[in-house]
Image (cartoon, rainbow, N blue to C red):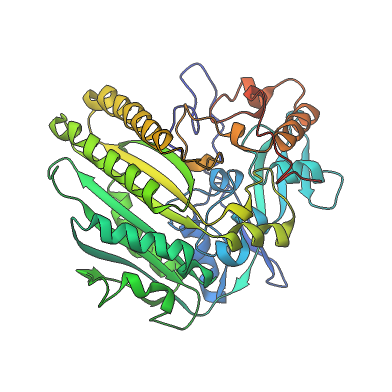
Amino acid sequence: MPIPNAANINSTGVLIAASGLTSIQLSTSRESVTIGPGNRWGDIYEYLEPYDLIVVGGRLGVVGVPGFMLGGGISFFGNQYGWASSNVISYECVLASGQIINATSSNEYSDLFWALRGGGNSFCLVTAFELKTYEKSSLYLGDTSYGTDISEEFLDHVYHFAHNGSQDNKAAVIPLVNWYSYAPTSLSFSAMRFYDGNDSTPAAFTNFTAPVMTPTSDTFHRRSMYDWVSEFDIEFALAEGLRQRFYVLSLPADRLAMGIIHDTYFETIKNLSNSTGFVIAGVAYMPISESYIRSGIELAGQDPMGVDPSKAPYIWVEQSLTWTSTADDAAVIAFIKRVNNLIKIKLDAINFDSSPYLYLNDANSDQKVFEGYPDCNVQKLKQIRAKYDSQNIFTDLMPGGWKVEHTVSGLDTTVGCAE
């Protein structure tokens, strides 16, 4: 969530850092692990590897635990186990009063437990997460790169995976298109592929492998999650300290709409080719299946987000911009606003009905996240916020991110409402 004040405070505030809360403790039964919020997912996967265990966590090791979990959390294991937050057993919380409590789905703090499953940071400070563990001895993961300028073919295969390939609940993919300011006329195409099983050539990935699409490089092989994040996070380490923004779009998996978004985005971004510093733009087209949404509900009940599974599959489009120079701030921010206004105009012109849900962890600061939750859940979140923080400590004194109190109303629907 690279937005101002989401993980920090300005010079007039007090920073409460969780960086020292890095404990990791496996239960005696090995059925759960309790982790401190100062960890990143790479730390968790390293700890669990000797036990052949895994948790439903981040797809990249550099991602921090608390923000990921409080926003719901998209995982490679989502088709089987739903949101990462659907796999929480308990939260250790510090309330606004200073009281330390343990919230579970069945104790006196069950309402707070529910709110933390995607409701953001309006309620308390979470000082520990207890997560379910799963036995995983064989996984296939890797990053597959393709040639340049294959937009139509690539989008076709993403679309077909959303409708067909994702029916294999063990398969997941992150299709990614990158643009670089030093080569403004070309695009690069890749796909992070994941398979939970002992199969190096699952049918779900037929369209992402030869002979349908011939890779220029491919690291897909049998490995652990820790091995995967250790390899891939080397690239992300190079980006530490750079400037970054996200923006997210959500739509039912529709090929025409995907093409409009893709063409508009990458045609408009050419205006940044004369930037002062180096600019990287990436668009990830993430297929979200019906089983992804239903698995979380079946495992843990309805969550605050209330995404409608009957309208799946979805494509959640994450736009990411990374740049080096403060001199380019205004141009990049203006681009984000302009290109998404253009996308909206073009989608409206074909009467396309986008999905109202926006994934909190990928949203930009000006996007209306809670307005995309069912209003029944928004009002319940506001009641829970008032119950545990009547003085708005975590709303007014910790202003970063999205606050339920600032949301007038959500969606007028009964679908996705918690009981």
